[in-house]
Length: 164
Image (tube, rainbow, N blue to C red; front, side):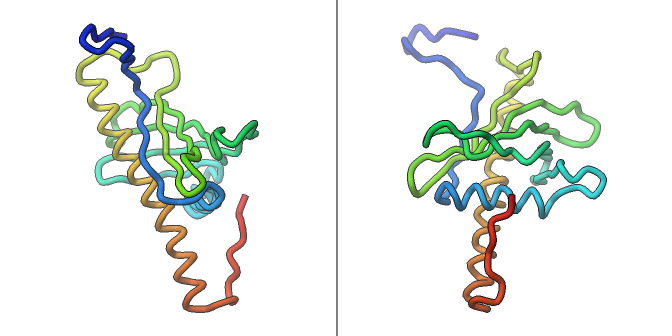
């Protein structure tokens, strides 16, 4: 880790956060629904969010025991990968409440080898993590929009139930 003498108290981090324009329980339900919708046939506990140039592969349901209102709503291990032949970067993905009306998607590296040094690995990680967080937020917001459109077109026909 490097220390910036021009900005005392500044500690660089590899945590990437992206805003999610959904209230906490709605975000949690959308995360669960995406996991069920995108689950792989050969491994139902694994699902992936595709981006234009990479993939965020999420393992497990992400269900966590919450100990307070600021705790993560969902947290899961995942892999970030650009292309099929590149080695994946082990990450942790979480959905956390930001306020009563909004949440955020967070991605941080995990494991023994973290791209902490300046250079290509760190730039590659940030590019992949930002793109993945943005795409996951979009997928969750689109999931909720789809629920709303269904309810408006066919009121009461397909009650939206929490999955999970």
